[in-house]
Image 1 (cartoon, helix red, strand yellow):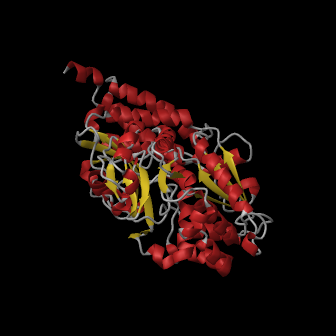
Image 2 (cartoon, one colour):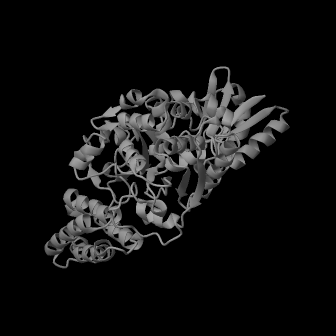
Image 3 (cartoon, one colour):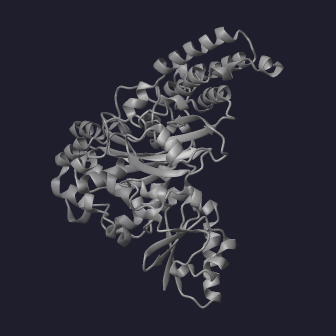
Length: 516
């Protein structure tokens, strides 16, 4: 029986993967052939989805992008034995997009059946947890600290220091909360993990719980990810039945329970304190700090709030050691970062690599430039509130400090590419409008500043005292950046000020421009 691997993540489903499976099964029956279809996550090469793979004596051979209309010709070409076909890409791991990657966090994604404990264990799963149980809480935290792992949600705060703060805070109960409210435009890494390798997140959260002394954890998943939430909830059930969750994990003295909670679609709930409010059943508005969640978080108890990518990196740190993980990277940015390349780009998808590549390498060499074939004009890094980088800054190394030195941020790893038809003044206006819509309303700089920001951009574009209003807009951005309670209002100025700084010609009055 020949095994065919077909992804079942949302990207593949949207492109007809389920219809493809039905077509494969029907065609095999008609030809009297025996096949077994294994559903996997995605490899992250979205320009090839649905990418199907066939198990042959030479390893898996990939074909993509495959549609239902290709199925008959694939059988005719002998694809079950890896036969030649126009859609054949050879061994996926030898494809240039994958061969250049360093996959630590996404090593299993697209390869295993996401809900198979056997697959997970056979691909180095649970080894980090086994070592964590062996070395105990204090050494776990020390190992994560030594690895140099920093929060992958955007802030880049050292993960080990956060864990130690929670572990050292006296309390009757501690919590681990995973922020899976992946709301940044052009990002999809959290979803890929939850749909393609959910046991890795369970393992990472369990290690964290043992490290800080927590017995209860929550995954806060965005409402737009129902498929990921369903897959992850099923993974929790399977892991619990197998003894990887619940009381006395695998015979150890440690216990940990886990639940999935679905959000209601508010972008601000990606901010950790608003997320905690929402988890407690309240309206998702930010809290003033201090106290930090590490001291007084969920239900006023010490709480680790980490992003999906931070927690999924932990099993590798524990399994292979802190020195191994810290051996990758650049400057103070250690380990690997799953880049999510999107927008007007030829090769969109997930590219995991050590920190340190230049932005130009990512956009031109890996992304292949724009899909439209026009010149790249701007790249937005770090989500809808990230700065725009022009080509003159493409020598910027991809790491936290280098981006901060150029008034940017890497955020959650989203990289959105625009060609030379983009109107940067409209993008600046969109940033203010987005903030005005998504603001929780608690602090004045964000609530009022964003609405005034939209008005001021409109004044500039309508030719109303443009120089004075651009100066006013920059002053408003400073007020929001330093006066807002959280990153929503604090980061909204990044796309606005970077657009003004690097693309000032787009802020010419539209009435005059039209007349010219």
